[in-house]
Amino acid sequence: MRQEIAKVIVGQQEAVTEILITLLAGGHCLLEGVPGLAKTLMVSTLAKTLDMSFKRVQFTPDLMPGDIVGTEILEEDHETGRKFFKFNKGPLFAHVVLADEINRTPPKTQAALLEAMQEGKVTYAGTDYALPRPFLIIATQNPIEQAGTYPLPEAQLDRFLLYVKLDYPSEQEELDVLKNTTGTARPTLQTILTDQDILDLQTLTRQVHISDELIAYINRLVRATRPLESPSDFVRQWCDWGAGPRAGQALVLCAKANAVLNARFSVVPDDIHALAYPILRHRIALNFKAEAEGITPDRVIGELLKAVKV
Image 1 (cartoon, rainbow, N blue to C red):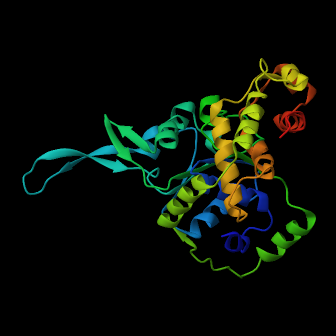
Image 2: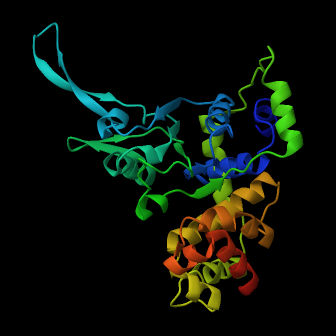
Image 3: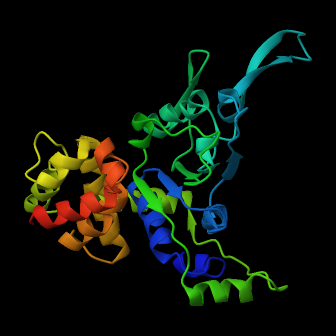
């Protein structure tokens, strides 16, 4: 899949890997980057390498929950003349859903994703409708131009397994982009995995071994993000509150997924360190003093990784 995606996406290998980890771990992913870094193209390219359904939703200020979940329409049985309501499924009913610029839509519509992300179903008029499995939501947002945007509430941020930040490409990568995307050549992508393959891989991921010592280390690391319990002066000085138990679950699952990607039968400390930043950065709330001093969540995580030993 990496090779196929690389036919279209130049560089951004770390972001691609983290999206694949999200898929293996059965979670959802939030992509953040300035315009023009191929966030949307990356997700659509990923979807083409999977033999699964794909839907893209452009989030706008006037988007309503029914526009993504679906709505009931009145139909008539031509044989009996009886009228009835039929649920017309929205774009959320796909294996891979791209929520483009999710922070452009009001909280009411953002909240429509919560049940889908957590429970794998949606409820309409008192009836539950199961979403297809596997189910992956990849949301994108723009860190600049915040006028007219609606920041995601903490409860919804916590539902995203990984918070992936995209940076500008290197000089050589950007040169390759200019050469490869301004001609007539159009790469042909091959389908690599089916929905059943992904479900099998998700089961395999959960079977990967992780020692009790590493689970204890993850537990200490997550608890160290909380100001009242942290052994780090850095956390007590700069943070209002830290990560909850869901962060620990995410670290265990994503470490296992990273082990699978690296063809290992068990988790090693490097798997945890590789995923600590995208898992914890959206689950740590900095105080006003930290923001005024220019302290970032990533810097706090870096200090924690130094302070909490394996």
